Image (tube, rainbow, N blue to C red):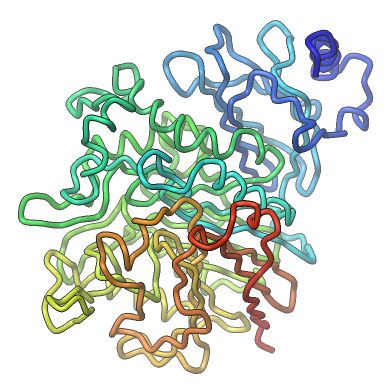
Length: 532
């Protein structure tokens, strides 16, 4: 677009944003792809519920005054999420369910900051939509200079996922890799090269409003902003955090145990979420007082670690971070806070929604011998997984909570139990037939590894620090339809009233050219029919 044409465009967009002489129908025509003018936006990520939208955005230069977001006839003033005016949040409430809105961003004096676009709310809780499509993936983060897939190829993977027109996206954990204290995980990020890229955190200082803010932005601007830019502006996203989003790997030695997270780790995770991607909007069936929910420095009622993707009466996806509230209490230890577990049980046993899925940040179904897993399997001296020797600092209470949740899923009536998790760098699907003493054969729990976006050559379980492929733990009888595949990819789930159809996509960076990403088709399809 030439300079003159672009000025004319932005002038007309300002008029549209302010509602002068442009019909609603005309404003709702949203340019797409390369034709859409992002203006001064660097990135934009939205989420929605049936009556609300929450959008996080950053701009190419700090704004001296608060910008505004127009959602139909509603005007929302932006809230600054950093201390320098480059990152903003927009919270639009009181919207109509199942409605597509025209959106536009304007500066304080009315100048358009980007072209208008569209975003739809979800159906109301009592509506009965006929279909829903959700894109799932994990581990998109990582700096391309430190062993990750290039940003260009990660963008290709994400755009290929978007090409299937999902109604929503679940990005399950590890949006950032910049470990600080873990003896193994931090090695690459404490080198002179890494410190030159980011600078060094001062763990005794605050995160925002200090030099730590600059360090954090250097990391996030390299790992989050270039992957998403504005491609997801019309697709609601649900970003769940995991260990690396707290700026460490889950490791336990006599010198350090990295989780539960320290205060500084939590502040880094909270600041990253606040600036870059939206929290989870309230849901009428999720308690307001769960940990890290309804915090005073966040938009009203949102939750940072426990979320709900509710799509009318068709589907409900429960998202939960197992790192933030983990405890080290031996037999009574938990990954998720007891009040969170009560919520998970209540929603799993409720019957008003056709399909209910669990989406934890850590994967039930497989193990690679890491400390912070549900299972006690550990690598023996011969490189094989075993339960015959103890896993140092592993907590048996974690497995007890695992079995309580798996039992609740298997006991659902009229539903096919399904767990789609994050963290594990692989693509897989299997059926749990036994979990410890639990016989699940009457209603097996389907477990899925959704596929990683950013994992590079040294990040696969079998080639990285773990030294083993992901395998079923001794605690389970797992019937694997697709054994874990160590390739990049994603999963698409189509929900209809009678079934869920899962399509799995993979790309092998070792044998396939990047151009193959643009033509990826499902290599495996699983059809989970709803029980009669």
